[in-house]
Image (tube, rainbow, N blue to C red; front, side):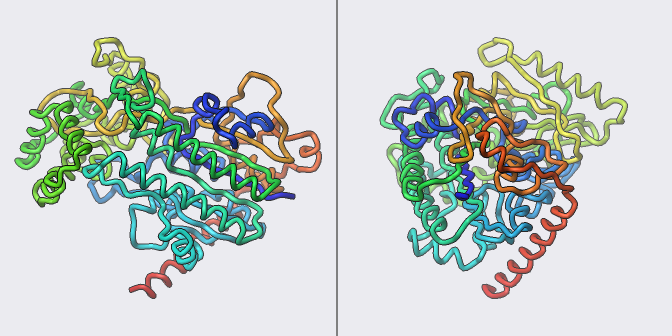
Length: 546
């Protein structure tokens, strides 16, 4: 049987693929000859939660991946917040189950697989591996040297320095990464006899975050210039790489998925400022350094910052780089910048909270709301309803009442108690708290695109049939792992939250394939063993390089 390929394209939008299908040769073939639909993401539609659910077939309350960060309920301190790693995932993955059954897998650039773990095959870590420099990014370790020679320096992703962020430089670097990924995929495919082959392209997510306003004529910050076609360019780039690859390898069973979709971002909603303004969050007195830094951002409106940034970006004035490198300026920028990910990663605002008087606060990349531990159990639901009521009365910058939808949190100590969306994800809640003013809305300074709940799903190959009606189905992200395991003839774990998508298979395939269900206990043990082996080879590596 031909190998099974699960191709991930982070943030790919089915609506855009259908819009451009006549210009996308690979995707047009999948649409005309295979089965396709939307893929409903996790709540919220965020890559760490979504990809780990893809790997395991389980909801975030089981994987414990809700966000890029790992944190505990506050009161807490800064050192309790860190980026998540592969060691945080304790549930067995598709490739763990395949390894237990001696099937060979190649996992390339899959998010949240750093450090790379033991596998019967090869693994090349995906994001956030590009933010680290300690551990190797490949298993086996020596594979990295092969890839470096192959593509003149392998890259997971460009490391973005937003204060030296020049759009054409970023595009050039992203294009370089995509081209290298294509070469690595071909090389590794030819290198082994694979049962399961999973490459992931992450570039579209970055492109759509930064350049959506150029593409979308209805975006409030729309700019029409040479960058207007850049999103299409990267869809076409990935399409061309995949088209060339599959013409080269011939027959294969292919699943193509994305962890979520994409759409416009109209602004930021400062959720912790909102909670402070409504009495749910109390802050301490502010330090002198923070007062000075927030005064700058209070006096200088975001439009003026954007104007200065735009001049620097287009003219590339050397003075700007030199100024940013000054220690005091750099410290202020890094600690108190408005840019949400910096505040998110630093966790600095936690030190400003008066926890004994705080009822609710927000953390994470999408501002999930937590209730504090000092609320008696009997009052928690009442406080939660009061927070919801306050958000229901939220008004947009235009004065119009905001459309706020709520999603209950997962039952876990690490999960927020409440998730929500504003205007169908057109406004991104961020956790920034500092400032003298009471503004709770800001225009987007860097991101102009954000995630949407519906991603893509395609199935093509000898095992799969063609979609024969015009109604596009919606599949569930938790169904991907069971579908892959069913296709590989491997057992589906009894505690998975999804099930195989039987409707995509031909009748002949369903006669050949058998549904097997197994208890997850022995595969959890296998996962622990593989993580132990990972620690052993990482320790050996660190001893050699130290």
